[in-house]
Length: 102
Image (cartoon, rainbow, N blue to C red; front, side, top):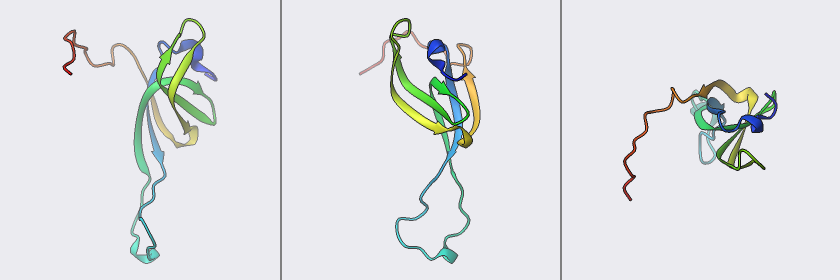
């Protein structure tokens, strides 16, 4: 799937991925650093682009039947993605019909 705009209404995914981190705030002696690891991340959104270089998630989509729009996009390098799970209506938590409290 190179461009997921045509399937935006149904293509919601959970990405599990790794990112870099800065382990210290200032100068640190290398021998005091200890073993380091990447930052393990989880992101959920509408998959608006999927190719061998990047996965692009949007937090919100609009006008999906016409001139599609998206906002709140995150670009994640495909090489950093550990797992991508397509979310379906059966994988979503049961919704409530009660109004939200403010």
